[in-house]
Length: 232
View 1: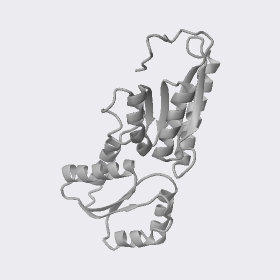
View 2: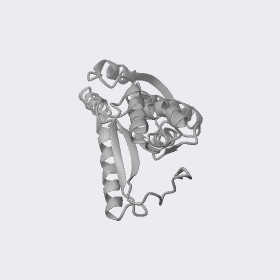
View 3: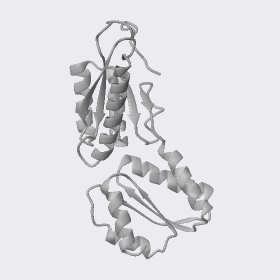
View 4: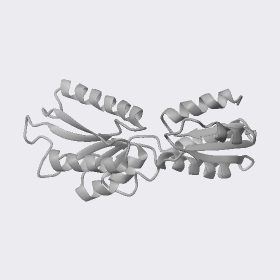
């Protein structure tokens, strides 16, 4: 659903652009994700505008860098509302979205979120989501482990709202659906880390049949590479 002020119907002010704000993590650890989301939004706007826009009005996408940081993202959204008078904002990244929800309520703007934390929706009438929810993804992974009859598993999660919610879901669903599966080791890692060999050694010594690695960005690739180097 899109909500518009009744005093400003969509077909009013012919020729004036429809302003849409966006707060994306274009710098910081989540920059690769922000870049992908931004590129998709830019392509969509270009496509809509080539087809004549919305009832003759072009869309103007105004993008601010949230720097992968909740505080910087709040400042960016405030700027979009106060300077550009936007009524609709796009964003991504769970920890950013969770921080922007109170501001969306306060400013009464529609916030469209591309992020997976289960608590993003359901608490505000001004927030919509376009993403797979962490709980749903966790259920698929837990089912896969069950199908392989894995008895011992480990869980490594990025120290981030999304990943920790995902980790909690895996733990809960494992207890529910795979009562014969034991989580033999759990740990968290930070987005800035590059050496995981001590943590991986703690995993390997417990000899799990499967390891969940939850997160995004460079640490995931490094973790997988170092797991292989240590013979797992």
